[in-house]
Each structure stands twice: as structure tokens, then as C-alpha cells.
Length: 198
View 1: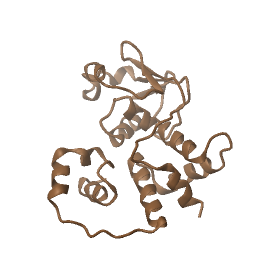
View 2: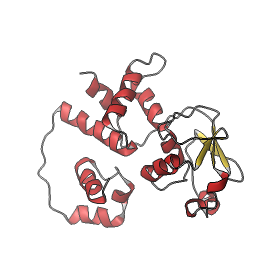
View 3: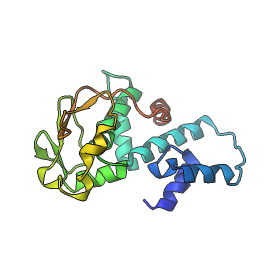
């Protein structure tokens, strides 16, 4: 996705969408830019925006996103909104991003696709792979010498991972300790469920 397009999406959906839109330069430009006329949106319009926010944040295509929503709506064990959040958070590319191995989900997706990540000792190159509680995520031995992971130990020492995953003491592997609970505060999965329940 081109940088220009990302900026355009951020202006339309909100500044928290992509990492590029959270820089001081972009935020300053937003304040000094043209004032947009406020349009009162319908419930449908607001729910559509929430859907787009989540879809673009996780970098999921529409068809795949609909599959996640359908799975969430048929879930009997958990609330649909919570289950949708869990499905998105448990994606391997998101896990790599949350562990601090990549600066963005797009880079995390590329890292996984190129086979740099092991899940339970096996190479996994499917970004949408769903991790489970107890899974062990590690960087492939041959990939540790690449520029991507050259100084990763130093970088990870000051990084705080979410509560549902934990790095080992030497930062060579991480364990999924529980089911993901929290998503980004600016995302509203309940609005997405309501959007698709129409």
C-alpha cells in the first residue's frame, strides 16, 4: 500500500491507523491543514468506518475479514466482538508485530511470508496462521544474522509486550501464555458485529 494512500486513509479514518500516521510531522500537518466540514453520519456510516479501521489496521482483505466476522458470529463460547478481536490478534503477523520484531504489521507480514519465523520449531510462512495458547514463537536460526534482527536483543530489552505473551530471558523465543484480551483502544469490534448483523 503506497504511503500517499495510507495518509489518505488516515485523514479519513483517524490518525491511529498506521505507524506512518503517528509521526509528529503528520500530526502537525493535520492541525495546519484545511478544516473539514463536519458531516453528521448515520449509524450505518459510523459502523462502516469502524469496520474499515479494523480491516486496515490489521491489513486484512475484505473477503478474509468477512470470514473472521462469520466465525465470530457463530461462536457460542465467547461474545462475537471479543472473539473477532481474538481471531485478529492471534494472526501470526500480528503476533510478530506485538512481540516487537517488526515496526509495523506490514513488515511483520513480510517477515512471516519470507519464512523468518518458527512456530513450535517449524517454519511458518502463513501470515494468517492462528497461534494458540502454549505456542512458542522464535526467529529462525539462519535469519538471526540478517539486518532485520541484527540488534533485536538490545531493542527488545526496553519493549513491553502485551500480557498474553512473554519473551524468554535471552529473547530467543516467546511463548503465548493466554488468549488475547485487549485490542487497540481506538478500535470498536462491537460496531463491526452490528454492521454485519444488518
